[in-house]
Length: 299
Image 1 (cartoon, rainbow, N blue to C red):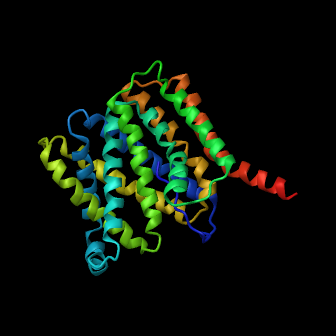
Image 2: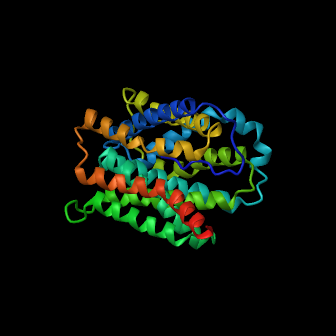
Image 3: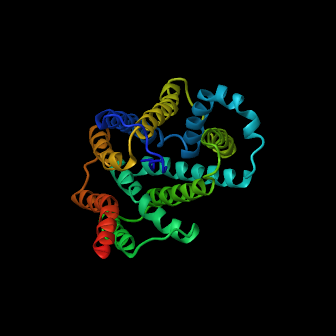
């Protein structure tokens, strides 16, 4: 699940059900994409799937890239942009590898920890102030992670390492995006699309596995679903307050759990459900609890 955009301006007011509908469609599309990645990940390397996904995105916005080519070739902070794309490339590759190796619901639940990791990173790397209340909720959230992965039951594997690696590098990408806050949004999006395609092309070529024509539609569909999902996600968040949509976003684990059960015979364990619930609740309740404590001190 992608982090909601952070902005100080209030989006145009529209009915919540309409934005929620866009968000639910996004979840359905992305979960379908994840299921395809899981199925194809047994045959094709994760980096190859990431490259093909980004290539479809590149082709879909090629006219826009040409239109803004002058801005893309005259960036003032090229290292910052490259770092952002690099972190995202690693995060996506790890994410695809995790989906191929682990149950869909487990990878989705681990992804919920990104706001917790980001909170710590923002404090250490950006100097953002974090209250003791938020640190306490973060600690409880990571307790939920321990319950989810059951270290005494589930052996550590490359799949789990990839899942947590995706969270770590994805959080670094968000931190880097905050450092580029003054950049044009369109430039950020286009440079990301171009950079991701270029950066993943070389490693993908090194490990490339030939794709038969019978498999090509599924591979192309990964990129198409990702682009459609991004459009629906933007439609949801550009016209509605993030605080109202964030709780709805956690329904993605329901989508992942259902698809994992339907197509792969994966049944979420009670520990996974309990741990995911703790992570979700700590993320949702942190801000209201912090606001309540602040008002209590002022009273």
